[in-house]
Image (cartoon, rainbow, N blue to C red):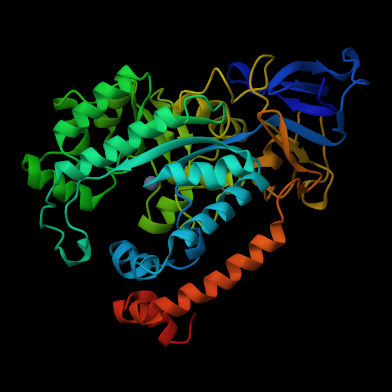
Length: 476
Ligand SMILES: [Zn+2]
């Protein structure tokens, strides 16, 4: 065997259970898991790399089901703002000053912080995703589900539009984007680390004709559509303007035969119970971004409601300005607490369900359940180790129950992760990146951050958001 981790608490996450193995071991050959079981029954002497799993949990690498890493250098740049200001007055004036290189550099930071905190699969959603896949994800050996954004809105600058002005749609623009989307399927066909999805940005940003064509291709390619669905007031106004009063995104998708098992719907906070039932019945998958949506919109995403109805749900972090980072440990804790509070019921969304959301469930939503998401012989070796031997997690008890399960979700910070293996490659070992100079990247990002904010200063001040007013008051 190439790599063996032994003497650990192994969580397999198989069959909707944690599948805890005491003094367990996991063996890897090439890119595949070849052993999961008791340490005693494994001859690991021949292993090239032996990782001592004593006082560690070994579990499947986590799946970030929806992430945009391109604005990473604007972390903290648009916080505590009214929702209506976030895009145009908050992040917009800063984003205008990001160069292509800043986007790559930011994405590198985003992916590294994800790996650092146990994420092995990233479902990246952006325009020109191909570049990020090559220069960032494959460069670092991360598994990526790539979605190319398809957006037909003709206006370059939407900040001049009133909310009730309808977007003009430009089908030629959509065509070009769809072609870019098709290209990634061909380009990464042979890559074991990359899989691709179709990315119409939202129902208000593409025409029904384009969306129907995308559906046809998604089914033909055995792929899925990854789309923002029912994101709130802006989208609802556009949908009612285009399709008539009382229309909603889900109603129109149903009417146009665009709800099916090929659809992965992100956010969904502007849906009602009937619409969610309809979506679950049509086998639509859902992704929620707890920190992002509560931070930017002041809304708890309906992840619990969807799961209650029997729907498949994954968790994502969205972009860094908003949630703050791409750490799925924080997301598990955040959605559990928000849901308990919303339902006034501390029993809902327990720790073991949170661990499923970021592993087996995330893999299922993205269509990767045969490849990753659990620790099973034959699956790809995406594996993380979590160090229980530290102050914030003490004591570790295993009788009459395993107290470290709730502690992983409610007490951990994510920095307890000390080994990350993706597709059989050891990317992060004993608390350090094997091939990446982390400090160099931090220094580079700090220097660029300083420049970007400096260049954006006038635009940012003249946008006059609440944040600007807070700065003038000396609060920030
Ligand atoms: Zn998004």
